[in-house]
Amino acid sequence: MNMHKPILLLAAALLLVACSPVISPDAVSGPPRPEPLEGRSVPGSPTVNGDFQAVESFFAGTPFLYEFAHEEYSEEDHMVPGVLTYTVIMEASQAVMDGYVWCTTTRDILNENWAKIQVSMEVNGRAIRRENMDLETYEDGDVACNFLTVLLTDWPDGQHSFAVTATFTVPLNDGFGDYAAGDYSEIYTIHVGD
Image (tube, rainbow, N blue to C red; front, side, top):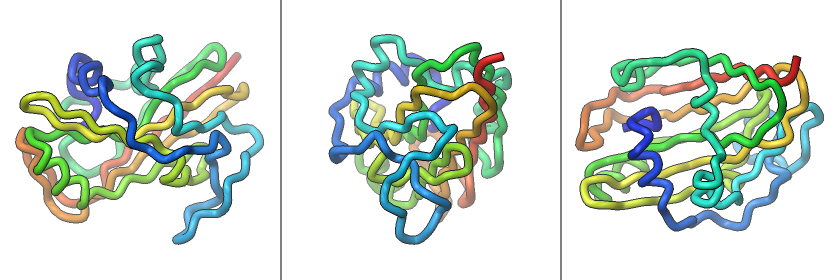
């Protein structure tokens, strides 16, 4: 189950304990490489932060990027490999969260599935290092979720991109449905300012 399931599940899943390492806000690296470059800022890009206390941010009203998207896709669209594109228009810079969320019916399935999912994120074509992403886990009754997220702030005026790709190395079943192996990508074009 990906992050576009009902918002109530999202709210419940954000009541979790952060388990990420200490993360530098200077989180954007150069082009993707086997060994990420040391952190450096990229002029003209938003600030990327993976140490942002997602629970507090969410309840303080920090939205997910997809909440601003003009496009909407069905649950079925999210259950097959491919690329979903989104357009976001922000009149002015504001803080938004985004990333990848995977939910299953049990913690065991979550652990098994998560070991077979590789997630990458990019802002303006530059890879975000994994250590600069916030990983949070939540388990409640019939739902266990991993949230791998970043907080994006201080957007300069102009056009930007944000991309998330989850690569399923084998077919997966989350307890809710079946997913084929492959790349599941979401690509956002973000327009900030006039």
